[in-house]
Length: 344
Image (tube, rainbow, N blue to C red; front, side):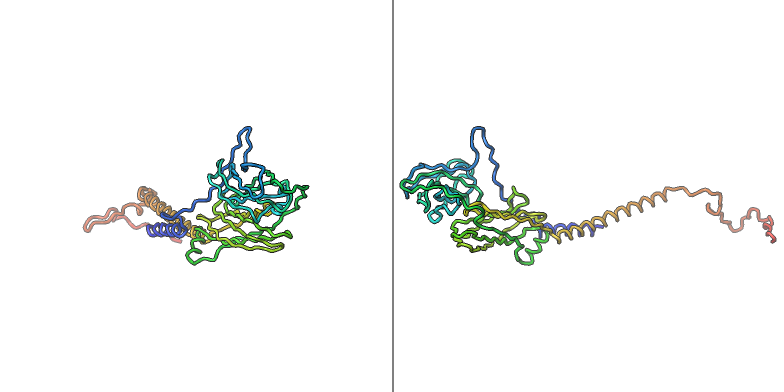
């Protein structure tokens, strides 16, 4: 029994160490989700931008304040036609990427040069988070820039996005750790197709994976760059799922910067078969230990009952202590005749 217990303990320790769950194994903390905002009475919640001035000369530099943004980086562009047709109305070539400090607070400021768009006003400045779904606009008047009627927006998405996560090809030890529920690497292939007849310049891809829509275990970002009309861009990112890896995982890719935001989602189920097999072996060993213990306990109880039981008294002297004659002593009833033999 001692050998069985030792075998079970050693097997459990090996599983924990290989899967990255034992002492000394570094646990990877899930990426924290955005903290929910609680709106206050009489105030407007959500991200916004504030311009230093709303009337500018072409090429003038102004300050833009980011209010209540969670994104770490953002892109800023000047758009004509109130950006009704998405990026097609915006001056993507002379846009600017900025880093936002003080996440989730009011006050981060970025300097921006107002370069007029190709289309006619009414115009606005649009800021889009590069690592989030946040977006905000502010109206602006560009002195001397022509004004025209608003053109109806393009109906439908400007791009098509697909995603395919596959388990990465790794070494033997990494594959063994993965089958035991340890850290598992995936290669995520993302494709972006330009559905328009114009070149898209500012498509940004932000992806995440987690057990639910509010939990991010890992995040990744891709920048397709310039994408010509009708062309398809393909990119790949390496993502690591922290241990323990089991159950359903929700993958999501968000493409922004080209009209309406486009999403692609997929759910995969991970089953660590080797871990389940070893768990069955452990359960079998523990079951055998329990069965043997119960058998020994029952045998000891039965032996104790036999030892404590009195001999049965059924009147048969042969079952009692037998009389052994002593040499030279008289045998009682020795003169009696033998019993008669029945005649048939």
